[in-house]
Structures are given as C-alpha cells and as structure tokens.
Length: 86
Image (tube, rainbow, N blue to C red; front, top):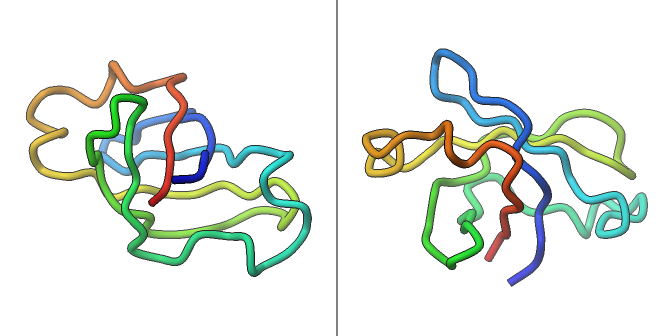
C-alpha cells in the first residue's frame, strides 16, 4: 500500500480531486498508479478507484470515482484526508 496524496475537492458530480504527494512521484511515469487502481482511506477501507491523472509528473493530481457506498455516507468528511493506493 502506497500513499497517494490528499483529497482537495469534491465536485457536484461526485468526482474527487486528489493532490499527489511530491515526494512519492519523482518525475517518473512508472511510479504513478494505473487507472482503476483501488484507493483506500486511512482505515484501509476502499473509497473508490483512480479515474484520471493530470498535471505535472512530479506532483500529479488524480481524479477518483468514488464507491457508491461512500457517496451514500457522505464524501465531504474525506476532504483534507490522506488516501492510499493498493
């Protein structure tokens, strides 16, 4: 399990924007997680899957398609939380 980054924003369409950790991705595309990689919260519960990657390679941003169970319980409580990728 690797640290992915911190949740910055949740759109009205329930897309989650995550800022990747600077130290984790040192400019190599190989270190980036793949699309559809499982994303976990700090208690190791799955919250969704990586749906996109954008921005500079050394500090990328990710979009997350949240799991339906997470949408029902409320995404807002995840803002500013660190998330991890499996």
